[in-house]
Length: 327
Image (cartoon, rainbow, N blue to C red; front, top):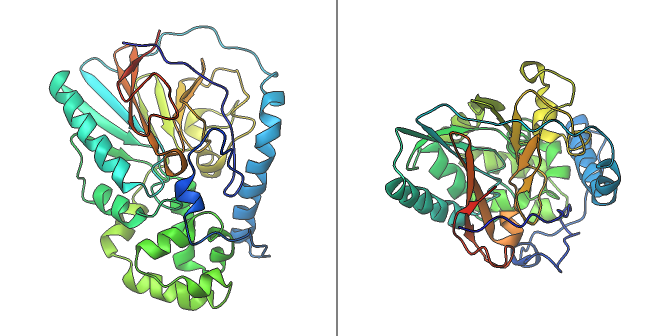
């Protein structure tokens, strides 16, 4: 077993990838690259603010990390007899999701346990080219353990577009065109910035009802033992049972730079990094599957943690695709 080499994460928005560190074939080869749109619509405006905040994080994060107090060392546990698998942001990489299912099944055969559950942290759609197939697999429950599926901000954008065609002005710059294409929608008009209502109608007509039901039933957080799971993070200083939905799905700062104790250790995705980001008060496991070809799964059992990785080995030199033991 090898220990994990933690590196400083990089943050980005579509079109601003650091190709020095990431394989971006799914970005560069996509036929749906467009510029960010501006719109007075409040839903669209919120998505555009998300893009701008992400750009801000690329340079501000190292400065903000200097603030806050480091929480005391605490032993975190999940209940005895339970093993938790937690999968990071998938973003349309159905190939990696299938591979991860195989790895989890193999892990369960080698290391038996009384009960296993897999928590998915959201962002199943957008950017990758297989969003429809990802939602189909999860909606059908095709997984080797029981499942808890959480919502991400990209699922919110998809559902918002079904109600408001103006959302596409921002969503198309965040991977929405790839999602529409995966559902068989002709995105030519959307790429040209025209007739969003016709695109919405075509999408709604072909959107499976069981996919809609699956997305409508997604929770925004769950707690298992000493761990709190959500897509993006939490607002520091706010009790976990009083967190705002918008923060749980979209927050970056002040959560990422906070060194304070949140009541439980927060496991999250949303903010991509080149390797799992392990801190005393949080663990981030979004390794940007759509861009790096690397999907990460955190495994929790009693007071132990380890990782499964599937996909490209380029991001974690020397780690391969084996579990990584943490000290």
